Amino acid sequence: MIFLGLDQDYSMFAPYPRKTNRHIFALITFHDQSTAIWTYPRMERLGLIQSMFKERYRKYGSDNIVEPAFKMFLPDFARYIARMHHCPNNEPDLISLYMLEQNIPAPDQQKTKFEKAHPAQPVLTNIFTYQVSANDLKQK
Amino acid sequence: MSTRPLALFRILLGLLLIQYALLLIPDFFIWFGKDGIVAADTINSWEPFIRFNILNFLPNNDLWLVTIFTVFIVAAVCLTLGFLTRISSIIVFFYLISFHARDYLIINSGDNFMRLLCFWLMFSPAGLSLSLDHWLKKKKESQDKKEADPKVAPWAQRLMQINMSLLYAQAFLKKITGITWQNGSAVYFSSRMVEMHRFSINYIFDHLWTCKLLTWATLGIEFSLCTLIWIKPLRYYVIAAGIMMHLMIDWTMNIPQFEWIMIFTYVLFIEPSDLNALIAFNYRDGFSQLIKKFQFH
Image 1 (tube, rainbow over the protein chains, first blue to last red):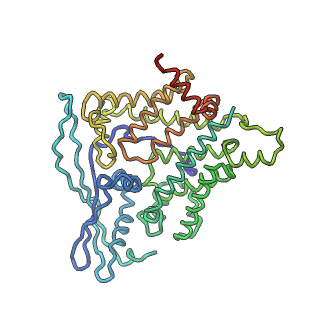
Image 2: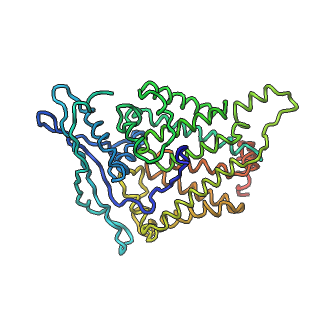
Image 3: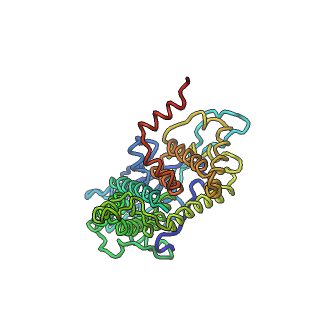
């Protein structure tokens, strides 16, 4: 069944919706020790049509790649970022992937109307660091 | 049984498949390309079992990828038009599972369900009406043989209906174990996931009672869509509730296609006689009769 893709999993917001907002970014350290930050596409900053086209980024970035079950894909992701920042005179040496995660405050059961809550303190986590090799930067 | 509901479903699913392809185009090489975000070797070694992927039988280069993708789009268009329906449905299914297998990290539950529907569609007589195949066949045959709406055994359609019911059963059973679905806060949390946000419905998401009502209503509707939908007198009420639920999710959340896959599947539950009446409905006369009916004298 799995061979033909007949496995079924309909688990949107089940058994519970995620209680955090998260986004990822990468810190790129180049050979001359300069650094740059690359921000992964953030849906909330895109327009209506653009966010429709980019929705797969949300699935990949927020739902999957940051989860431990998908950690074997992190080197591929880091290599992809390195190739994006390929610069013949100053190649990227190190890719550090970070996740900023912010808890969604629980609803106040004593109030009938929710006030706009203060944003929670985001937690910064280094999810992966990758040492780039010359081979990684070659287009296959 | 009439094949019209199935044929209409084929058209709607075909349009969704075309949209699926179009939405992928801008970042196509990022998701599937040889220098993309996920390497083919990594995805193939991720799971202990093998998934069918036609791309694994071809050289790992972007030219082949584009060729396969183009064939997929052409097959999806043919499926929508009902041209060479059986062949195009087979191509669509095998190419769709290949793209899903190539990058499993970007697909959602709606994509999974679309894949299953394409599987059942291969075995169904979906091209027997509302299709170019049917039109061409009619042109060939003599006048007395013409049959506008051929009748067939509806087993493939029934399997799709059962599949949909099982899907809602799975969703309901998974959700019912979650504490946020039990205490009524699931809609509150899901409405505050900023990355999924589309349009606001401020009052509903700002009040405790509305969030609780919507959370429990979702459970009730999903339960009905796997049980009460099989009771004929209740069917259209359940479908109406399902459409309302999915339209509301579609309005508030950016999950393109997901809700429409579910709504389009409801077409399979429409009685052929009702669908035929809808197709034959004369809008000018029908609406004027309706207006007359509700006019004050």
